[in-house]
Length: 95
Image (cartoon, rainbow, N blue to C red):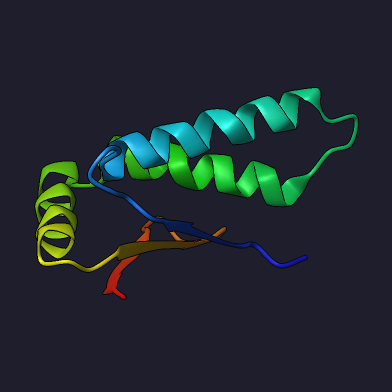
């Protein structure tokens, strides 16, 4: 089984990086609870978002993504966590 979880967040001027992460978190929780099957991929993504929201420097990430938005770009924040890692890799791209 692959223990890698990858999530792409696309904050915008109406919903910052924290808002985007919280919305996705609750959507995944709702999906997981209503599902009749044990979806380990969804479970890993929920755990990744929990860790991200608890440990990430949201203020810094918000300032970087808002700068990209005000410059006319679309920020994409990529979160990666291997199941045996304690850390989350965070990559910010502008498209």
